[in-house]
Length: 332
Ligand code: UDP
Ligand code: MG
Image (cartoon, rainbow, N blue to C red; front, top):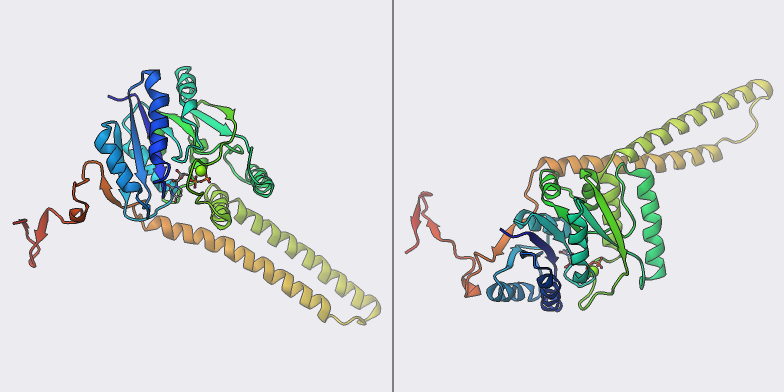
């Protein structure tokens, strides 16, 4: 029975994975806890899987799951949590931006009874634009979301078994884990550490991907954007009504004398803009319902440490061959 499971999503991390593993083992062995490392290869296109196979072959504490394609970090975290067998689970990045040296401290805080221990990074060494944008985003999120999300509180965290089980019991397919972590509750404590640069390789989060991630976060936790659309619509209706009354009163009092098309155009353009935006918001929710209703799995597994065969070319050969009639017979 292992005490600690470390879950590590990896996407194209072949350059750092060995260094990461060495650092991790170096940080954990002195603490004396029994641990396992659950690597999840998120459909890497480089040699990450080879590195993982190598690690699993030399270190019995290493397990891994490899996806059939890139399913995203959220899916990788989910797969890792499903693999984890420990009483305590730690989620961390493979690029050494989440320093393994902090693990003993996190374990210590967990021993004091906390179900979630968050290592919160500051924004040292980050570009001023990105830092400002993220801060603005978190302000927005705090206003509009029903769950509490702190700036810099990412996925580097320790979860107790019951916290993990609660997370795994949430069935939604559009997973925004920052929100889910906060939604499940339990006693949470956080401490700050200085942000570190990625050890090697490059970040997979460009501007566009971050923007989409942000929208996901805002939409997946409430229907307040819809509410906002309704409010705007109501206010516009009210002002249009007042305006119409004013025009009628004006015409009754001193006849028509101003051309109306300028106001008309303004009103039409303004209103269509708002309608389009509202439709977009509604469409986004409908899309999410459609997506959820398909009940697709979050990821497809290509290989695990148990299925890993020595010769990679034979990986996809099934154990049984289907006859045309559909009856299975053992492979010759
Ligand atoms: N990652 C992943 N799937 C993805 C993108 C990223 O599993 O589609 C992993 C990546 O290998 C790393 C972690 O998520 O371990 C954080 O990614 P990255 O360092 O690129 O993000 P950043 O630190 O720049 O926010
Ligand atoms: Mg990183």
